[in-house]
Length: 280
Image (tube, rainbow, N blue to C red; front, top):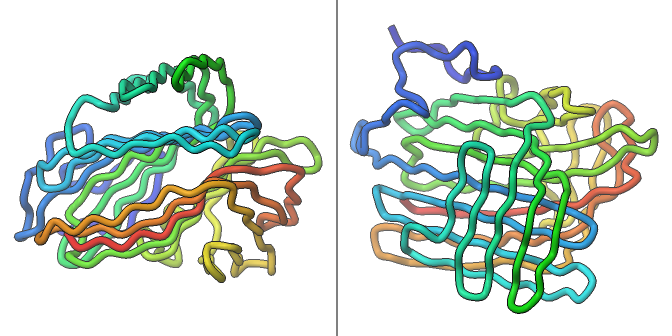
């Protein structure tokens, strides 16, 4: 029986008949290669950082970036090699040139898992709000951080041409409630059973479609006229063309202001925006 997709839940009930992480997924399905990644974002008042491990058709890639918000200095690296980033079991570890990151990742909200059709196959993602705490060493400077963040685990047999816009961040409402959001257009973005989520004090709520306006400047919500405004502070950007595979993305770090659906006004907010086009 073909499972009914898209499917959204907390991971306890899943579509039948589809291998999903942590089960092994075949390297090819319907002629499409498996892509998988785990991305960690941790966004605080002093430092913002991200790190990820990626495999596209078995080809390993890893990247990390650390932004010192007081100086505006962004230190980053991308490598097509395994071992630079390790993430799992509530822990993130990065070992690179002039950087060491050791963070515990404590869940702070309901996980959201989505399985969607994509091209002729299917894709999966799991989003988990976390509290990241530990040490970040860049050069000769060691910093201890504790801040909110998000873990994005994804896998699937994406269509040959895939493009998306994404916003993820954390903050506080004017009434003191803790906020986290994951907003997307172009992937896992069905009108219902999407990955679009706002967490308020850890409770997940799916929201309606969103629009990304300008040059990654605003996110407009379809529900009630709410909007987030984004001010970039520093940017990761990279373009790779490996003949069979190609990737072109921008991911600025920065601050958010404005409101989320339901009349939730931000007192503060920070995180990332992203635009990514892939041929894989």
